[in-house]
Amino acid sequence: MLWEINLVTGELYVSPRWSSILAYPVGEIPNTLEDWGKLLHPDDKQKVSDMADTLKKGKLNFFQIEYRFKTRTGQYKWFLNRGKVVEVGSKGSPVRVINTHSDITSQKNAERELQRNRTHLEELISVQTADLKQAKEAAERANRSKSEFLANISHELRTPMHGILSFSSIGLKNTDDPSQDKLHSYFERIHLSGQRLLLLLNDLLDLSKLEAEKMDFNFIYNSL
Image (cartoon, rainbow, N blue to C red; front, top):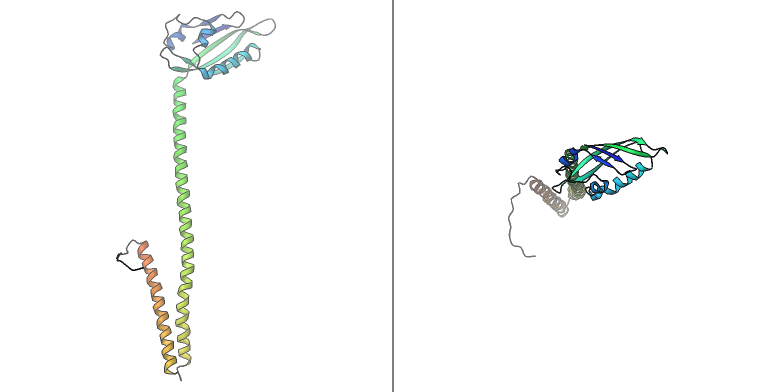
């Protein structure tokens, strides 16, 4: 579509293609800047006004701007306006400007859809990142707990093992002439330490079964 504007007289020429692209009958919209300005999207009016002021001050020779016009159905279409000053006055101020307009509605819709998909993708990535962070933190907590457990169980296992080794060593040193009471005491302590060690090993076995989901549960009433 074509426009030609006389910035001095305010005369405006708009090609008939403009009316058809906006679904208006040719001639329904008067060829004045005021009437065409009424069709501008409210959010675009200020930037169009700012560009026009800059143009009138002779600060632009060529310009390009995007804005929306209202169609006869009430919807808005996007247009790319490329303009060029083709005549200047004696003082160098612009007089005539010619503009070409291209309908870029499809391009804008595609950009909006692309942005919507990009935003959705960013949201998905954000959620997945949060899930991964939680999983990482849970794994680190589990690893710390396992390390603490192994440190504790190692200590617990050493205690009865020391009892077994110590009293068996004492028994070996006194095999020549041990009294029955002392010998009985040594074996009793070795036996108790062995039982304690066995309980701890059974607990470890139970934990392994729990992790492997092979533990059988027997629920019974107990008096606290």
